[in-house]
Length: 268
Image (cartoon, one colour):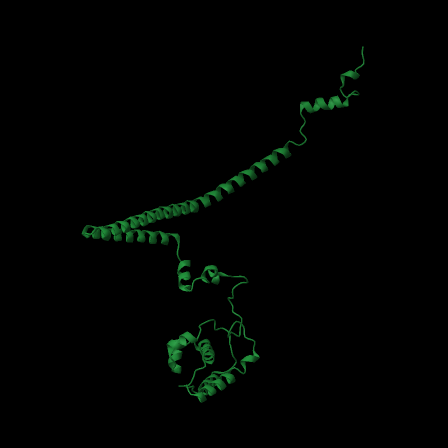
C-alpha cells in the first residue's frame, strides 16, 4: 500500500469541503481511506481560506504517484527521495507556527499563560492528567472526599472490632488495639477536617452575599456625600451679598473718623 501524504490529503479535503460541504466520513469513503486514521491526521480548523493553489486533479495525481515504502533498504531510500521531493517546494514559503501557512485567527494574546497555569507544580509530577483533574475540582469536592475517607475508616473499625472479638492470643489483641487506636485518631482528624471545610464553605457563602451589600452601602454613602456637598454649595451661593444688622454697625464704625475708637473721642 502506498504511503499517504496527509498534508496533501488535508488540502484536498479542505478544498472539497469548502466547495461541496462534504463531511470527513463521506470523503474518506469516497477516497477509500481509513476514517479513524484520517480523523487523527486531518485537523478540522477554519476552512474559509485556501491553503494551496493546486487543483483537485493535481493533488489526486500527486497522491497516486506516491510509491510504497517497505522495510527493505531500497524502500527506505525511495521513501527518503519522496520526502525530499515533497518538501522541495515547502522551503519557498515561510511557515507560521508549525505546518500552517496562514496565521491563526484566534491566537493567544501576548503573555497569555492560561494553557500552562500549572507549570510551577506540573514539572515535578509526570502526570498531566492529574493536573487537569485537579484544575476542575472545587472545595466541595474535598468535603465529599474527606467524608468518604471517614466512612472508609469507620468501616475498617467495624472489621477490627469483629477481629478483636475473635482473637484469642494476647499479641493479636494488642496489635488490633494499636490499629484501632490509630484508626480512631485518623477518624478524629477527618472529622476535624470536615468541620474546617464546612466553616470555609460557610465563610465563602457569607462573603458572596456580603460583597454586593458592601458595594451597595459604598454607593449609598458616596451618593449621600455628593448630595450634602451640592446642598452646601447651593446654600453658600444663596447667602452671598446678604446684609445683616451687625454688618451695618461694623460699616458705621469704619466710616467714623476715629474708626470707633473711644480713646480718640474729644473731651467736652
